[in-house]
Image (cartoon, rainbow, N blue to C red):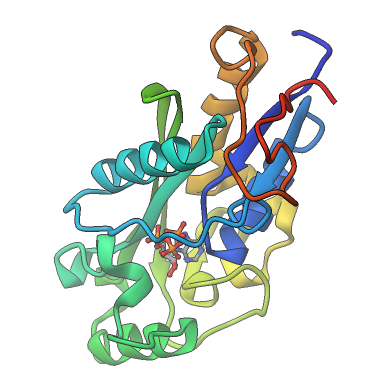
Length: 227
Ligand code: ITT
């Protein structure tokens, strides 16, 4: 692996995701920046019907706006008894102004009376790394569990408190960040991306110019890849 660092934009507005991605990227020679760092407020319209379609669109959209290598992901919860819902609608399942708490309430209501054996679910994460109009790498991670009847634990985000992971005998909301990362859909998808980054191949390692505002790292057309 090369010793210098690359700039990587984490193209997400979800603080929980960003925290987990930063954690996973850990000690890689990567300088992570966010949409806020670059002053990018534009929202990608998630109109795709699959996680991979949305992840690809998001990654290319923000890579174009930023001019730097961009990692984006689309993820969600698929519940067997609900025919795979909420799926790509996970973030906005409870409608306009959706919050994690409301989304959880809606799921628990829909699953009322559904027996233990039929409460199977999985988290899915599709991740795309792109740069200069080109997809460099894609990955996908899945983790299977079951939906409990009452939320448990305050860690993580989203549906974590109702997603029971049998090997740990706890919900994702009861896991440490390291435990969740070791088994989660996001941790698994990120593993492939980390391998790609470690390969040190161009164009990721060739340079790029951030197109963010003047205060942003790399703003005003400066080369930013070698601090
Ligand atoms: P960005 O598009 O800006 O990344 P978002 O929250 O809108 O943020 P998604 O469209 O990919 O992202 O929706 C993902 C939703 O799926 C998220 O808001 C949670 O409700 C749920 N989700 C995904 N991963 C999760 C996890 O690890 N734990 C709990 N819930 C998760």
